[in-house]
Amino acid sequence: MRSLIGTAIIAGLVLCPAAVGAAETVIRFSHVVSEETPKGQAALRFKQLVEQRLAGKVAVEVFPNGKLMDDEHVVRGLLDGTVQIAAPSLSLLEPYTKAYQVFDLPFLLGSTEAVERFEKSAAGEQLLSAMHGQGIEGLCFLHGGMKQLSADTPLRLPQDAKGKTFRIQPSSVLVAQFEALSAVPVKAPFTKVLHMLQSKGVNGQENTWSNIYSQEFYQAQPFITETNHGSLEYAFIVARDFWNAFPEDVRAGLTSAASEACAYGNSIAADLNAGDRRKIIQSGYTQVIELTPQQRAAWVAVMKPVWSQFEGDIGKDIMEAALAAAGAS
Ligand code: LMR
Image (cartoon, rainbow, N blue to C red; front, side):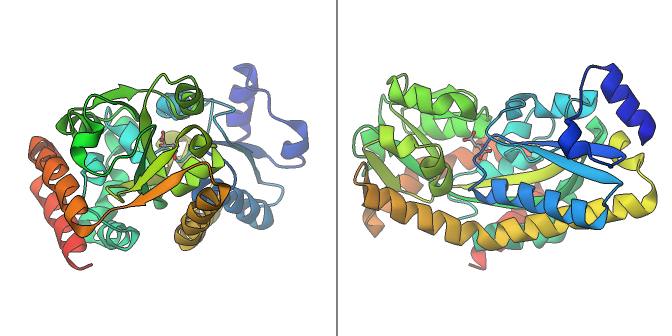
């Protein structure tokens, strides 16, 4: 491990002395959201557990809010050693595996409970190693929450979105989802979204209550439609070579700290999102639109047909496991 630190320093990746302390290795954890979100909290829990259990051996520096890099670049960062652990949205991992597209299919995994059942199925667990061939390992899945649609005008029916521009994560499924609405998807990094909304560069976006609140998107969006049309899922990921270079006992400690941190994030995600929804309503900036069953059915009818474009690439086993998890809700 000392050689890894040496390599990092030689590469100019100077480690923060305060965080290094007496630790042999410092792990940089990069993410793009606020510390008040499920992911922000899970990252901090990972740091706390690691530094308690592996004191003197490993320390963790957490970089929230995209301070180190955008998640669009984080896989490359893991492979070149700029960063050692990350928890990107699975939507961003499409260049490495098509399997994760299943998480973006609109109105498939319709609740966090369904997502959880799917991730715990045999097919779901195998998905953690979907990037094995690229030198990346998944340690655990983490829930961001269900996505809502925000906009500068009220969206009650799918046709209300026609011709409007929406910022999206770079995912073919999300492109297809907005094109199905005859809307215009605009791919952009998360760190640019607030400015895009404030400057009216786009009309709207989709995200969790927690991200909409903590990034202040709601202050620039007078309407949020509570669609719960998809889930925002993450995975803690690491570069296999980096991870395997740890002595077995240290690696085991890190792996269990990651699992516990994800479990912690998952346990607070629903409450955090519900609390942020309440705060948005109380702020008075934004009207939250609840759909009637008929309105909701209209969104499902327009968006669900995009599944057929992606099912082949995702694979039969994964689709069947996701459908089974969704059906059990
Ligand atoms: C987004 O880009 O909208 C989200 O993926 C950000 C995140 O990591 O929650």
